[in-house]
Length: 226
Ligand SMILES: C[S@@+](CC[C@H](N)C(=O)[O-])C[C@H]1O[C@@H](n2cnc3c(N)ncnc32)[C@H](O)[C@@H]1O
Image 1 (tube, rainbow, N blue to C red):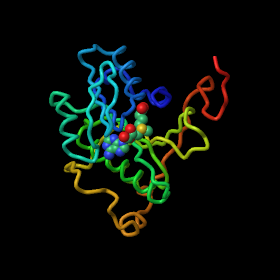
Image 2 (tube, rainbow, N blue to C red):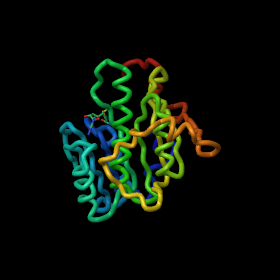
Image 3 (cartoon, protein in one colour):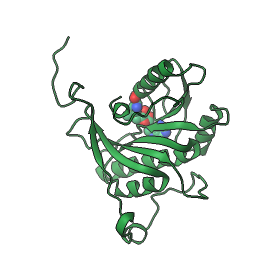
Image 4 (tube, helix red, strand yellow):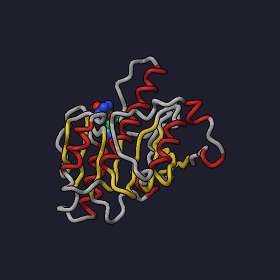
């Protein structure tokens, strides 16, 4: 909600949305309430995907599936009658093992999987919002290849003590000739060769924007029970 307030993601005309890694469903609930209040109900299509089953949410089509699978992308698009999504959001988090390096690597892989599936289902000009973990410099470079603008947002509802933040990517515009595919993990690069030799504007600095106004709930504060 706070990211939407800051970036006006669900503005007029947005009616097709994909919520990746959606269970138990709070993001889907917000999407459904906001979009069905603004657009004609028959135009609104919200597709939520998760490995786990979710309780039904009004106006949300739920798919139990894995976002690393191409079949999931095909199933999502089949619900948009040939169109693509205006926006994809992803709050994916793997089960943690406690081995931090490994957990961070798997988290990064999941974000990459989210980007990969997004390249299949998002329309040109569309938006992508995704949970980001640690050590994501490489990911920023990759996102910048596909979106005109990439910023990081830390909502007030996210604890300051947590590394949690979200990348907000605006205006999907893949490189000319790019053919989406899921079989090619984007992290499989030779980091030094592919990225450390970039110079000038190619080394992108991503702005970090806090959002949520002063009246918003602050996750580092204690509130009395009502
Ligand atoms: C933090 S929860 C999402 C919370 C959700 N945004 C909400 O508002 O309720 C992270 C979710 O990522 C899902 N997940 C992890 N790996 C996944 C994958 N490969 N495909 C689909 N969902 C996945 C988990 O099952 C879990 O439900």
